[in-house]
Amino acid sequence: MKFKILFSLLISLNFTCLGQLKPSKMILKSGDTINGIIGKLKNKTFEYKMFSNGKSKEIDFSEIINIQIRYSKNDIKTYNFFEFDNKFIAVEPSILGKKAELYFKTYNVNSSGAGGIRINQTIVQYYVKKNVEGKLAYLGKYDIFGTMREKVIEYFADCNLLVEKVKNKDFRMRNGLEKVVEYYNENCE
Image 1: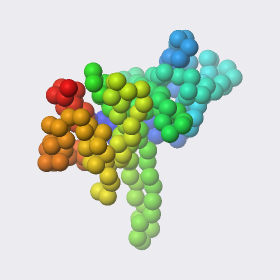
Image 2: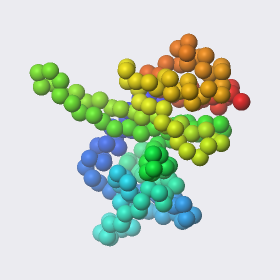
Image 3: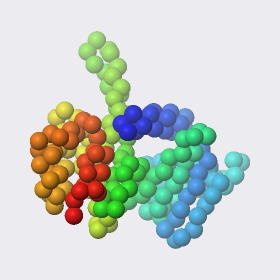
């Protein structure tokens, strides 16, 4: 799964950097569906055109339920939109379960190391939502100094079996949170 996330990030960043509009389908909170548009995600809006030679329009993330963007014949990404920290963000679904859902957002960080060596790193930020709640919770990003483990323990405190598995390192944060959320969906009340 982590390979899929990394691969999807590289593909999506490649096209985003080029600024190309891609074929898309958008479902709005008003109940309308807009098919056959071409568009791209921006920071707070989705820019789209109805026709390749048409005028660009932008729609705020707060008005959208989800968007499917076709990057290639077999690569269609779905982005869901949720309010988080008083703004709306686009996240990709990873696990959609009966009790909890896992979403992620990826970005690249480029930095220079000693001797002018350039370091490129892909960061995956994890968000989770219990189906009884309407809001996303930020669990963090994996890094060796992060606090994601503590946030996972706190968020899933209603499932003692899962908390023990995280504390005993049966679930390692560096492997992603897919197995944690799957376990919660299958084994927790």
